[in-house]
Image (tube, rainbow over all chains, first blue to last red; front, side):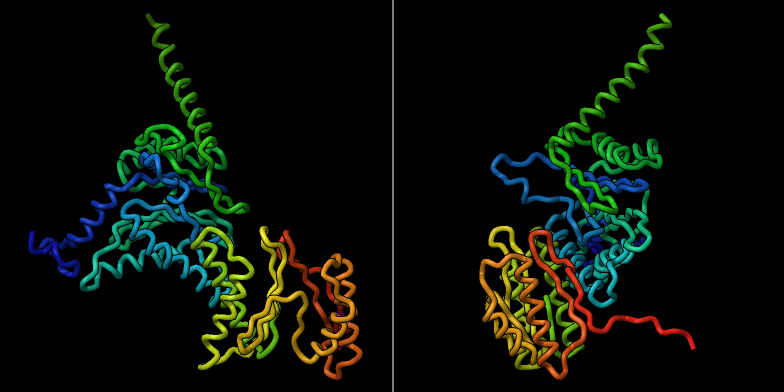
Length: 250
Length: 161
């Protein structure tokens, strides 16, 4: 195995590309990111690891715009993310210039995934160490979409997904609790999912909401705190409701 | 951005500038200032000048929150001037004279529209090859918008044979 994991272009005897799998490991160590698709709203929420006191947190934006109607969040190597995001932004404008139409979410996802794949099949390069969650509204039909890409270059559409640290537990939570939501409900579902693995509080989560009419909106810390408080209150009420029937029995 | 010149170059170049200005905004989180956009435009014209020149003349208008409105004159050989009034083409001989006579730096929007109308009137009466229709746009703190058309020849429905 040691001989098959140095160069990316070499398969191992049992069909693995070890460099790609190691890239996925890097993603697993990155901060948690959640995306939830509603009927008229799509939400991205990303874990914000404790910011150093002297750092200006406004310069570390984890959820970015690719175009007026497309946004991206990622987990993994942030420097690799910068390169990918830059190329995607250029492609969004280039597409508008030549095709005279904004990109569809699927197009730009395919582009980013294609880029990630290219770097798994070249000599002397390593794969991008990040998975992305791409959200947006189709510019013609207005249908919301959520896509995920990973270092191997595969991509698929999701109703809700998570990547990065503890993504499996978040996905389990989403599988249990997902239902078609809209507006504020979608936002609450996304934050609830992220709170499964992240310390609660506005300063530990970065949340952005995309709607057809207003594009991407980053939530302020106090807005997030308010919603977190609402969620905790709902959780407490649910716990109390569960407990009270049993006390009646005694 | 108002442009005149070779038709293909006009469309290609202005759309290219538009998309690059948008790209800057996504990359950097803030819009380009008017001065920066003007200098970028001139730079692109200058780079292409000695190889494959764009035959496009441009009047660039923009509004910045800090510095207010500004107007830039950029011609096809990549000269750049920040100006209060500008015109291109054969009609410019008449329009510029009109503006020399009537322009004041403290004009209101209504007075400015009146001056534009005076220029249009001159162009219509003096130019042999005068264009029939004019479109007036305004750029201010609320962005760029169409203000009015001045049409000599309207689209008329043609009755069926």
